View 1 (cartoon, rainbow, N blue to C red):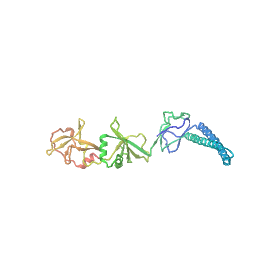
View 2 (tube, one colour):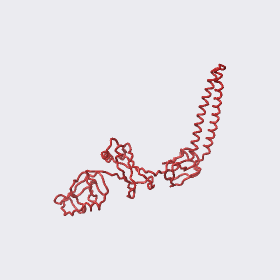
View 3 (cartoon, rainbow, N blue to C red):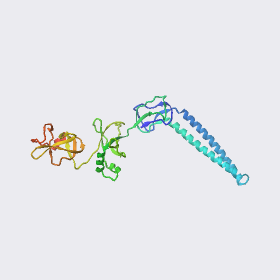
View 4 (cartoon, rainbow, N blue to C red):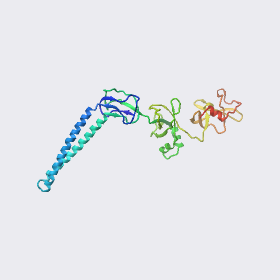
Length: 323
């Protein structure tokens, strides 16, 4: 979150250092407040004068009312006095607003942190002239209590997501989504799970993707603003076959496996892949339950070759290619 001054002036003090942890409401910078205190004093003096004029107008009205009631003076004089009273009251209200505005400006000379977080780079020094016109912020405070991770779905993935979860609206479907994982840049898994909260309203015309946001608790402050990683979403697929990536090969941007027939003849078969889970492809077309595929030695195998297979147990395959 950018920290910008609300008033112009010279920086008297910088009370924090770059990288420091600050609390919400903590004073970070102090701008010279003398001009603004003089404005406040002047506004307060004008308010006092306006209140005195109003008091005089009130007294004048009080004096004239009984005279009008006794038909001693014309009612016009009382109406004039009441008009002056209303004008004096309006000046008092205006003066109070000016005092309030001046008081706010004095408060703005103490620049406070709006959130708990870590202070970023501070490009200014004590004595620098700062104000609303500065292109640079005084600093940035990165809130770390919760970290938001933004990720995107392609149009195809988004349509599949809409079909996967129940709900009458997109908001209802998001509420049905399970907690997600954050895989950090070093491929380690962040200890806390996150919750998908919002989605942008439209697809990006340039990338053809739509953005989501997941919120992760950051109790220990491990995550920092700007950190990168990958979001891993659990996916339930009852009609897919998990195929170890090690048992596949690519040809012309397509993924193939060698399928054995009843005579142990290998035939290359293209796969339709709709997702990944660890070291496995999730296949919805190209294989069916009970098919035998070649797991190793693909580089020496040719289409139509007969082999003598050695059966591998499922446990040994999973051990070699964990999910």
